[in-house]
Image (cartoon, rainbow, N blue to C red):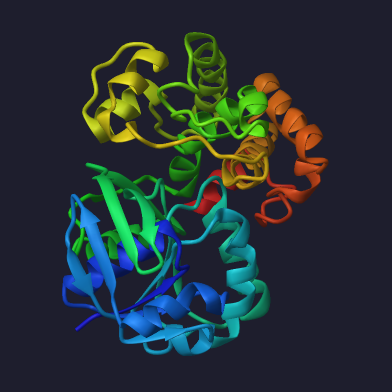
Amino acid sequence: MTRVAILGAGNGGFAMGAYLSLKGCKVNLYDKFPEVLQPIQRKKSIELKGVLNGSATFDRISTDIGRAIEGCQLIMVVTPAFAHREIAESCARFLEDGQIIVLHPGRTGGALEFYNTVKGINPRVKVIIAEAQTLIYASRKTGPAEVTVYGVKKMVPVAAIPSYYTKEVVCKLNEFYKEFIPARNVLETSLLNIGAILHPAPSILNIARIDLQDDFEYYYQGISPSVAKVLERMDRERMAVAKELGVRTISTIEWLKEVYGVKNGDIYTAVHLNKVYSGIMAPKSPLARYITEDVPMSLTPLSELGKVAGVTTPVIDLMIELASIINNKDYRREGRSLTRMGIEGLSREQLIEYVS
């Protein structure tokens, strides 16, 4: 029986933990906030609703990360990307040889940062660190011990660092999820971060409505034809960086077709044809994750990788600057830099060799 640790009791962590428990795994659930775990500890289970159904129980529910990951073959990190470095620092000394750690998702540069952090603290441990390109579920917690899954993506690329471990990771994940497929390397998964396109800019360009706490559907009403034009420019910049770094990528329009089965068109049309996005409401604060996570952990490292690739990213850089002004933060300084990802000073060719 596979032992799995789920690190993070949010929307994705609830869904993934419940699903793997129902698939017969021994699942440990960790979160650093005890108030998040208390309802599950009282009820002894999580209710899984929507396109997946069941009542799932857990082996351990703990705020002790060492206890949570002890003896686990799989460690699923299902937290906001801004928590990845903290998670890596907290678990590094407790890791055991042979464990597989997967970030769901890595956003941009997640596996690079996690790998660099763990190796800086525990250089002798022999673990595999990988990242998924996106979170497999469209899900929301609909109660203290309940999660609703609105959709499951048809395919999710995964890559390990170095990439020669990717096959081993995908084989393990495929025991429970047929949707995970191998990517070339972590540059491919990072640069296929479609959340970087769909999350920050619509939030920034709808900031007046968010400040006023308007009720509006994030995708259907927040992405207008004019907003979609900005997303298309950002998408072209992302693909240009990927091309120069020698990795396969696809447009956001093509991704929506592959993952959700929507027809090709422009971004505006493709988003509005995606039934999974129906009912997903916009955030009520400029401090929501679509800005506070996706700008420093998606757009900033994308811009940084552009420097290595020799590609300018003016619209992406503009969104970083606007988000920094809105929240009175320096998301360029606070975000994933080349240093934090452990790749500062590498040339384009050296970077490609490093991840391979």
